[in-house]
Length: 446
Image 1 (cartoon, one colour):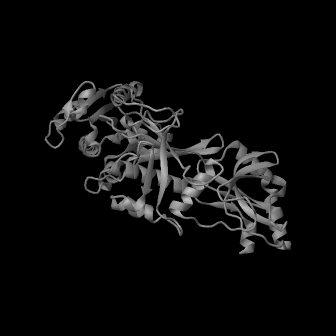
Image 2: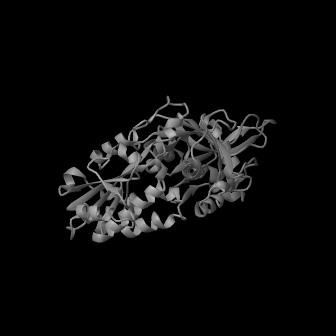
Image 3: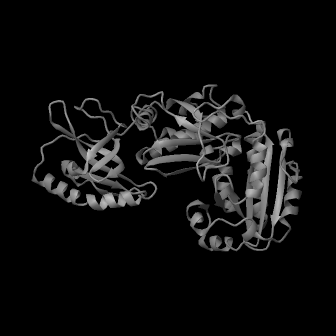
């Protein structure tokens, strides 16, 4: 975190009267009913500001449009009124080091290369701490975002959101944050980010930014990359519903319903991702979970999919995704192998050692690997189905079955299964930008 000093104040504020449950248990009601909301925003000046930024902040805070009380420290008085603290720094590199060039490649919004370089030498920074009663969780955020935009435009400062770890030009801030509101309802998917990464061979996804609504951030554990898009949509839909409609019941359960979202834009975007068979709604439980290194300084709620059948976590998730978003069926093949197919398969199998090496070295975030493996049918034939690889040790491969078999007992899509490298027929490597490699046998079959 760049703003540790401010963060300590904000986290201390949010911890007031905040009860916790044990990991794996629902949050107590008090955890969903925080008395105050607080967060930090930074302004980095790429050149010496023409006016004193702290003075400009105080003048703007007194404007009746904002009516923010200036304080030295955010405290429990935020339970009854909107507060603003402002720390001005002339020693930016030491006190509030700016985001790196590498970070800005991924989380810089509207920032040019020239601005990114200038940001590394920013001569001044203004760190703003906002706090307001939890009843103002949306109106208080809107007020703060408008305040930040107006202040940043005075000297064309770069805006740093310390909760989502994003940097914005004033124009990008206005476009991505303020212009995505519909009346008093924010598009929460534009107010948060979702980080997904490899975690001990499985995928972990976590939101950043829900603290600005006084709500826990959302986590999905033990998934696979091919489910990343629908499960990311699940986080966005759930975050929107929590902001609009409030928390789950005292057991952590709720019914997620995309058609019930009031924000027309996000409802439309999410609905367009529903495939044939998807109902657009499903059951979830939100349970407390432990934080990991790099997680936001906020309570964390893990999404539980146990309302759906399955023998493991991934199968529960897959059945949830099918129920809510539908599915594009993966092909199931059982066929006689002619000479052309055998040649294509031999070429694919020759690539397997290099693929194993790449997999064990670590695929890039968003990249995933599938292999086509045989499964014995009821009549002792073979069905060839895709497995998304999660483990590869020698000849042994484990992963998630991508399709429901037609003639194999006891298997379902989403189930974790095993296969042998020596028996594989083909592979499919999917890169983060959507490019693919392999799958030559399927082209022949088509």
